[in-house]
Length: 105
Image: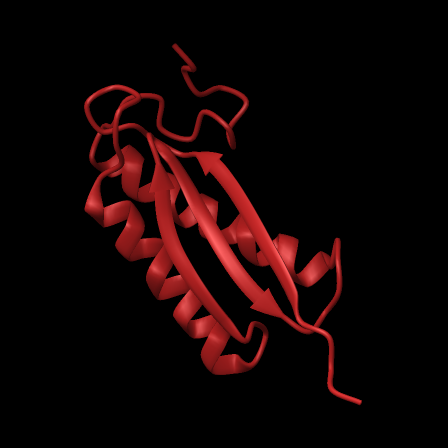
């Protein structure tokens, strides 16, 4: 019997580009790089990084089942990496869904 594939879609607002309307390409690139390494290591099967407004969306397929700690840790670390990029760019609300001291507008 074939392994089951889980689709995990996890999002966070890590910094808006022009307010809440978009996300800077550097944040998408940072997430892409992080998930690419996870795919190469075998943690995830495949992925797609996108956005909805200023929310960074991580769409990942894997064979680890629902609510897997390693997958959620990967998402958390990816959002932290994107938050660091947002802070360097001084983006609006950098890390607002991640950091307790971030401005949330």
